[in-house]
Structure formats: C-alpha cells, structure tokens
Amino acid sequence: MENLTPMLKQYREIKAKYPDCILFFRLGDFYEMFMEDAKTASPILEVVLTSRDAGKAGRMPMCGVPYHAGDNYVAKLVKAGFKVAICEQVEDPALAKGLVKREVIRVITAGTFIDETSNDQRFTCCIYPGTDGVGLAFSEASSGVIQLARFTGNEAAVTVMAKLPLFECLFPQQDEQQVKELLEHPLLKNKGLSLSPYENWNFNPEIAEKNLTEHFGTNNLKGFGIEEISAAVSAAGALLEYLKSVHRSSLKHIDRLALYSETGSVFISPAACYGLELEELFQTLDRTVTPLGRRMFKEWLYRPLSDLEEIKKRQQAVSILKNDPMLRDNLGKTLKNTPDIEKTFPGLAAVQEELKTCWPCATRLTACRHCNRCSPKQARTTNYSGSKTPRA
Image: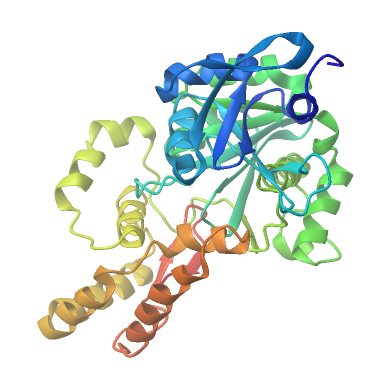
C-alpha cells in the first residue's frame, strides 16, 4: 500500500472495512470503483473498464458512474446479489487541507434496498437457532416495525418464511452451515436469498435485550410480551443492530416491536397459495390506485380474516363506499396521486430524501382528513403480525 497514491491509500483503508461490498467511492461528480470491485461491477453496470495511475504500483483497474444516476446503478448491483457501500466526501473539497475526508454513509443490501420502481415489499429476516427454539425476526425497509417469533422446530419457521417476500437472511457466523441447510428446504431454496453472516456476539441474549430496550426507551421487554422467548429476542436485537449499521442511522422510524401471530386470520400454507393461484387472482382483481393500497389488498387476500366481528366491520366499511359513488370517486381522485409514504418516510428519517417530498404527502393527507365517513377503526388494516396498524 505504501506505493499507492494518497487517494488510493484512502480507498484501500475504507475498502478494508467493507470487504463484502462493492464500494462506490465518490470522486467529484462520479462514483468510482477500483481493483476487483471494478472488474466485478463493470460488466453488470455495462460501463467501460479502464485504469488509473496508482503511483509506483503502476496502473489499477477502474470504472465509474455519474453520482446523479447512482441509484440506478446501485439497483443493478443489488439485484445481481451484491451489497453496495456508498462512500461520500464529507467535507467541502474547496475547504479541505490536503486529501478530502471520505466515509461510508450507508450500505445497501438486498433486504434494505428501497426499490422505487416496484410496489412490492422487501423483507430482511434474522434467524437464531437458540437453545429454546428457532428465533425469527423480520422487518421491511419502509416499515416501522420489527416482528418476531419463536418456533419449536424448523418446519414452522420455514412455513412463515416461505410466505414472506424475503430478500436477505441474517444469522450468526457460527451457525452458517445449519442455516444454509435450513434454507435448502424446498419452500425456500428458490427464493435466492442474500446471505449475511453476522458477528456472534450480536445474538447474545443480554446484549440483544439491551439493544431493544435502549431503542424503544423501556426498562425491560415485559410490555411487548416477549421476555420469555429468548431466541426471538436475540434475533430481533441482532436484526435491529444490523439495520442500524447498514443505514448508518438510529432508525427512529422503527417504533414498534410486534409478536408475530396467525391469530385473527385464516392460515393459508405456501403450497395452498400456489394451488389456489392467489397471485393470479390478485393480479386480476387489483384495481388499487396507490402503492399502499396495493400492498394492503395483497395482505388481505393472503391473510383473510377469521374473526366474525372484524369481518363485519370490514364489510361495513366497504358498503359505505359501494353505496356512495360520489364519495368513492372523490376519495379515489384524492388518493390517486398520493406518494408511496411508507417508502418515503424512512428516507426522510435518515435525512436522505429531499424535504420537498413532504409537500405532496401533506396535501393529500390534508384532503383525506375531510373524508370522515369511515371511522378510524374502519380505516385500519392488519399487518403480517395480525396487529392493527393505522394506514394512510
């Protein structure tokens, strides 16, 4: 390394901290990649592989992309199964004395990538094979909740995982072989999950509980009803720390911890979903006008209610709109141009979105406020845990 230019020494030092990532290294108006990263990325990104003077070390392979189009190139790498570390200039080049200071501001993975071209969700899950069972925790990048559960055997955990749109799986390094064998199950092997081994100490029950209580501002986990399922707590605590580390943020928008439950809904196995052709049915019936509505409708279809009173409440809400065409049309027009709030807010929380994105959200929400025909209870929906969550 002593034969490299100062800038490339800086690159090597930062790259050493993220060996499993393609490093997008900001140089002026470009994100540059060097050495093996450049060789790997250039054919995927369809950019020319060139080289750069590396001082006494000779020339070094290099490729680059314009920073203003960086999101498009990141998407290509993530969908190809790679993690991307975004390294930005963190001081003004005009004011810098010597080499401009740079640091990684975010790591983008298969599970944390927010795909603006798709309305579908992308979950990251965490598996912990504990002494009291298999702990499972999962979260979606645009949601504010971590859901968790403990299973006495692998089959039950596999069934739940198979029903979720999982893209990344986190697990303790020491259990890598065991987890890989679990993921070879016929219901999971074709998901193409990105695997992310994580340091074992993150799954320590005491450390995991401390991470969760500090984040949610509680003295213990009794209020969540999960204090007796140690394996699930370990999985949830490790998942939270992992998400914070890749987002390089405190993730204040994650403000709920929910125990996963099938209570209140009809369980439909993955095989039954396939046999019933639910995806084809969804595509046929879907007339929603917003990304939020589309995801909610899909949840309702795959997890139909089993509680008679809840079914009646939902039917009553639907009847209000069915019997009032003017209300239905006005509501549809109001909601039609609503941005994907669930995807926008996490970015705002991480100070990564322009503040102007708040304005269309605010104007649409203000307009919806005047539609008071549906009660708050009727405007609620059910998430994967079965818990009730207000939706815009």
